[in-house]
Image (cartoon, one colour):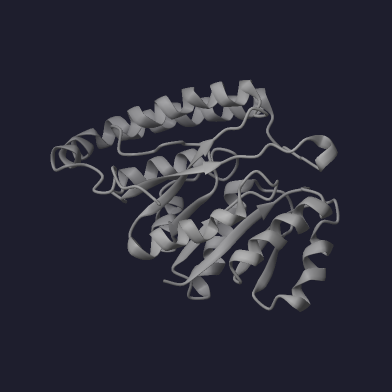
Amino acid sequence: MKLLVLIPSYNTGSRLLADTVGHALEHWKEVCVVMDGSTDGSGLAVEAMQPAHPGLRMIQQPHNQGKGAAVLRGAEYAAAEGFTHVLTMDADGQHPPEYIPRFIAFARAHPEAALLGKPVFGPEAPLLRVRGRRISNLWAHVETLHWGIGDSLFGMRIYPVQVLLRAFRSTWFARRFDFDTEVAVRLCWHGVPMVNVDTPVRYLTAAEGGVSQFRYFRDNALLTWMHARLMIGFFLRLPLLLWRVARGGNPLKNATVE
């Protein structure tokens, strides 16, 4: 297994991005940052780190295209460079870099699987965000007949590169905030084994440099449209999904990550 840590970033801020990348490099040497048309100069912080970290790469998108498009660009790069897996994590400091070895250890044991972080929220987590994601999770369970998506929106994950690219090729969508959910559902439709990894989440305050690109009404409208499309795909695939459930479903559904 050859793995690349992939960090999409859009106007995260130089301090926060450098902190996220720096901590990721403490746990894995091969890291790629996809700058999704950032205009805040944060790419300069990554460039400044490159001389000391030969495994640190940076890809510049010409303009902002969305999280999914940034991950797609990074996955295409990873495939071209011979990487078999990518570990995606957000640039905003929410995901714990110290969990990178835990994800990788299990991926080595099950290289065919997708590992999905399942958030463990602290008391500082916005209640609206915590409760709101339950709706998307419910729809994802319906659309996959409970194949094994613990959380449809959490972005710290390991994907086998080729199955990730296959999921992207199966849709014109999943290029923005809808990426995490739609790709997870499509991986289930393709029969990819899935494992959920309980992962703590940290919401940084503005004083700590916390930045969020989430826009409540815009992004929830996008998710609503996405689930409407996915339900159509679900009904078209229902016989195949029922057949897979009858054969036992996700073979790693009850697997645990120590």
